[in-house]
Amino acid sequence: MDQQSLPTTKDILGEHLFGKVSLLEPNHAEHITGVLLGASNEDILLMLEDRAYLQSQIGGVKRVLRMQDNTEPKTVSSYVNPQMEKVAEELFVKVRDFTEDNAAKITGMILELDSTSVEHLLESPEDLTDAIDKAMKALNDSDHQHKAEKSLLAEELYLKVEQRQPDMASEITGMLLEMDTSSLQKLLSEPVLLDCKVAEAAAALKRT
Image (cartoon, rainbow, N blue to C red; front, side):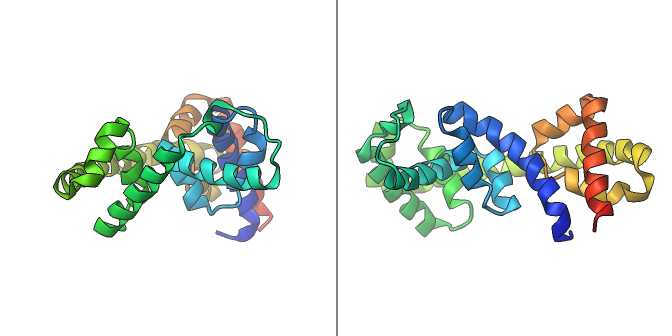
C-alpha cells in the first residue's frame, strides 16, 4: 500500500485505539494514544485485539511519562504493586524461554490468574509448562476462529464496498480490513458509517 494512504488507515485505527485507552486511562487517554500511534499498524491491531498487550504498552508509556513529569496526577492504575510488576517481568522471561511466539500474549493470559497462583507457577516449572501449553492451545483455537470470522466479514464487506466503489473495491476492502472485528461488524451494520469510511479510503487512493 502506498505510504500516502497510511494516514487514513492510521486515523481509523486511532479512533478505535483512543476508545480502548480511554476506558483504561481516561485522564491521559489522548496523550497515551498519541504515543502508541507511533507503533506499526500491526502492533496497533494487536493492541486493539489483545487487552493484556494493550495494558503492557500503556504501562510502558506511563513509565516514560512519569520520568518526564513527576507531577502526574495519580490514577487507580498508578498504584501498581511493584512486587507484582517484578513477578510479571520474571514470568515473561520464563514464557519467552519456553516459546518466543506470542510470549507477551501468553504472559498476559497467565497474569489474569490470582497472584498466589502466578507465584506458584514461577516456582513449579512443570505446572508453568502446563499453563503455557493451555494458553498456546487457547490462542491457537482463538486464532482459527478469528480468521474464519474475519474471512466471512471480508466477503460481506467486499460486496458492500463493490456496490459503492466497484473500480477500487479490492483496495478499499483491504484498507478497511485493518480494523478490528467488532469495528467491522459495526461498519457492516451501519450503511452511513460505511459510506463515510469508503469515501475516505477512496479519496486516499485517488491521491496516490
